Length: 306
Image 1 (spheres, rainbow, N blue to C red):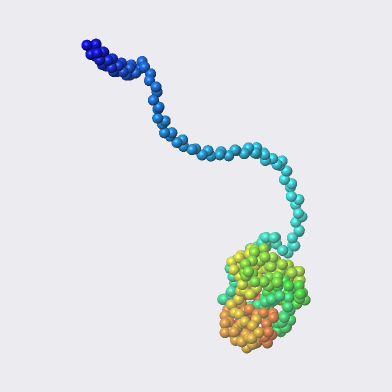
Image 2: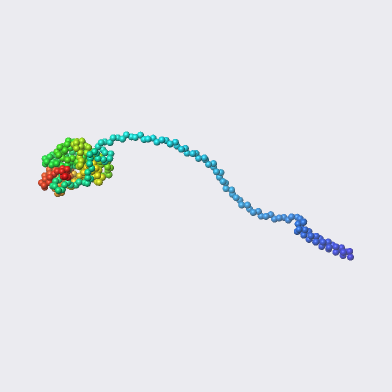
């Protein structure tokens, strides 16, 4: 019976032990009993992103700007006036007519009065060469004929005795510029054109004591509005011609010159001739006689224009 009782107590102890374990578990659950800590798993480390540091350049010290010095104003020195050379009396600085000069028409003249059977012989010089001047004067004198001569200033300076003879024989003298330039090519300034006329008139007047106004003939006949207008302002009419026998061409014979004139002869005709013609001396006498034989009178331009 005791053995049975002991066994019973043993089982009870075991059961009690089980209860004790349960109690212990309960106490742990309630936090009153601390068992040995279980190993906590090490968390996987999150890789830290590597940040590459960008080196910030150390700023260089900014140089302090040097102020631009303000220049001290230098007073402007007044220019020393240069002495102006006194202009030659015969060369105008501008195209202004002299005292007592009256402007005339700039219309070009091709013929004279056509109501009368009159014509004019005109002789042009082309520089300082005397050419046939003496021979012409002798022929004109022998026939009692008066004409108009367009002379250059160079001709007057080179041949003053001939110019005086032209005047003494009763011929008119007109202006053919100073040294026979083309007045339109190349283009000319007003001052150039005016100086050509003024200087020629001065050179001729120094010999004759008289002006060449109002007779002007441009070299080669080349003229334009500018030339005619400036000449008119200086008191000159621009005289052209109505008959050109081309005596300036050495290939043209005396007979050619004569026929050319007689074929085109009309009242008021202005006939062009040249001091340096190769054959005009042979033709001039015959021309005068042929004109008069046809009922014309030969007169200077002044009379032809009246």
